[in-house]
Image (cartoon, rainbow, N blue to C red; front, side, top):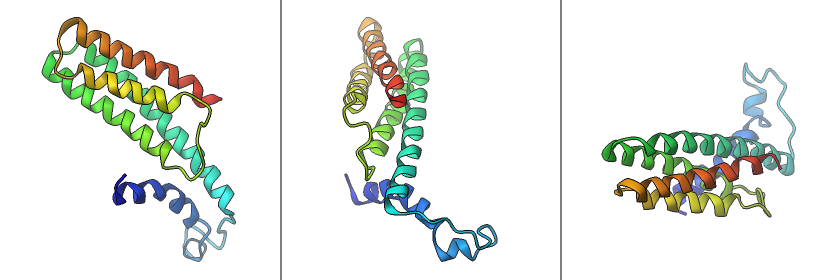
Length: 149
């Protein structure tokens, strides 16, 4: 993880902390009503936002990967790359959380496997491509219900 990735990963919690600052309190939007958060509460709110983000990434990845199955090779490869970026974003958002998110679940391994299957599909044709994409979608579908646990 590079320095810019670390900063991006911390921005969710920093954004939440902003609402407890004098800057927000003294702003027209704050109106003297800044929130009072402790570190645990900031991290819990951040965990919720991260989970919502990752869940949406997974949903998008399923839609785009499914679409890529029937697209011509060049367009399909572009769709696969788009879907893979969704998977990578979900992984990054979850793994950079200050709290361990979804420890004891298969979310991270399944996302990793889905991303690997997407990579296998790029540049392939026919059944090899279709099988890899279907594997990716199956892995992503296994992730979805785990967000509600």
